[in-house]
Image 1 (cartoon, rainbow, N blue to C red):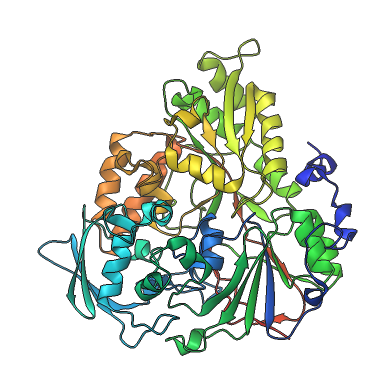
Image 2: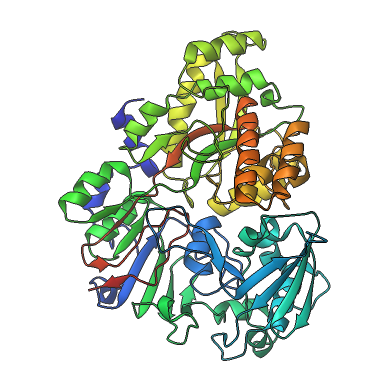
Length: 545
């Protein structure tokens, strides 16, 4: 596929669309929003809708980025203040924690005092218990299935929780789990008082949510916009927003986002398309990139009807992709993947299967597996037109489809909205809705051991509690995963995870394509942003002059 063909696949239109105004592209933004205003930061998201506002956001990591860590805090959080090192988990609403040396499944968390929700009510141990019940106790009055669905991968190993005193809680895991502090960064605290005030109705809570975060939701309209204002009373004075207002606009089409930025309708856009970058730079826009724990893969089905049950087919699919060519077409805004994690990561290890572009090697493996020119592999993958970390999924998938065809793999797509795709991922390959689908293209992170390796590969981590979509089973994987969960010393855990990663690469568990460089574009008057090495970003230091 040449560059022209690749870029014309962007949302079905040519990038000349960036010459149109945002109004002509149907953004529906009023003239009052057409010019930058000091203190107002306007962001165009890749999501097609406003993420769930009740506490556990929808829309994947982008939802957490814009409607999770903005409105809410968790017991722990990611330190997003540094650009030169990978983000680490640090204390947030919990000041400290300890593990019982006699029973390493039992954790004690000391809570931060003097924290209030947006409605003025106090954050304490009762609020933590109430929120855990909201997500995990199905007979609790405040239980919310929508939030429980979003939180399932974070709280799956939490077995019990109880109040010790007003500022101390105990959490017991089902299995020994050194990864728990990472997972708690994804569980957010909603206000029990606000839920009572709105008649114990999560639908009404969504319109007037209350968390403890640095931003307060003022208003939102589904699929159109959300307006957040600074929380001047946030407990962490260093994270009180520098801007007065944050406006979030769903724009799944890449060209629409570029047009909005160039016409002054927004100040910041997520994931600018590569062909637009030269023009954006010419117009003095800032293009910001950084390494972060992200990969763009295909999760595979290991069910009986899947051709990828055969390791030779899985390896052939990995060898069929011209990653260097794809990176070139992406304008250098990605890097070829050699596995789940990048080669410089401490978890990379020493896999023996070298993921590279080797179409002849792919053909040889397919022949050994019983396929050939008169008997191609037939596969169907679920993909999306946009979404959090998805980059440019339609043209990228068409590029890969051509690569596959060249070696004897006939690939068919089912294209779903991003949230619909994520719902299918949470169901598992064995669900009736996924019958006949052999893979799913869901951008992925490896910010912690669970989401990156253990939860994707272990047989005890099947969705929805884990991330094992395809029912992958491997005794060595389970052994290493269990050891990693019980390793509280980072160096020891890293060594185990490196062995685990090496093994899943050698088994070609997934098809790994590229690592995204997390590009975003912003107007010259946007100041103070630090691009963390994370899927999440902190907007509190950002100003618009």
